[in-house]
Length: 250
Image (cartoon, rainbow, N blue to C red; front, side, top):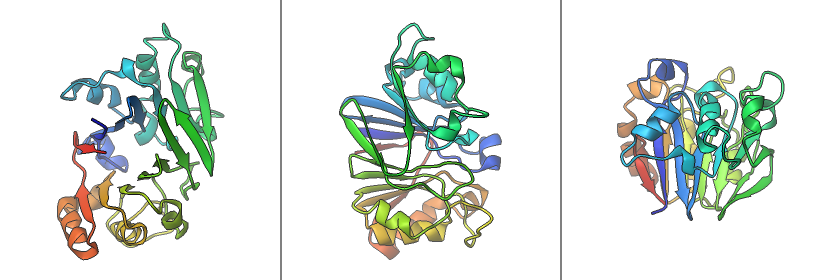
């Protein structure tokens, strides 16, 4: 079965450091290829405690959408696990350049364990195993950040301030996963999507299914499952609020 498993749905610092929601990132299995996207704090534990258990030694790649710790804190330990402590040189890391340069979040010694490192950039196209994906747009965020368009049909809108170009970048996606941190009004000082932004993306991109995730405190207080139900009724698109451990069939 091809699927995307939510090893965490936490977004923003308070939800992460209080572990009100888990922060293990996303585990993608598609066409026999396994990818861990944004392994945040607790990613290894969440994978191994998953039911059924997810085996990090079977990973083919790790993708970091950006360097912030809620997306990258377990990157090094997941590389260690994927390569069995470097005993097997295998796997590919896909990462923005600034996660690898000054003040890197990926340690230099674990990079030697990998088969390769591909640096993400706007308009980039990449392949791992049988999966192809692209990074159509650099997002507006305090650090270098990219969303993912996987096989042209599954879009992950990573952390970003809303810009109209997002709609065109992810147009055509059948499944739209949106990191929505805030419930309030759009604020240029806080470069994250709001619930209103998420609705605008759903209405503009028109996917078959949309999933809200990466919740901050204000979204949790707004009861995202109720918001998703309302968005479904208002947009005509099936909208789901992700839960820790949820499996989305692809």
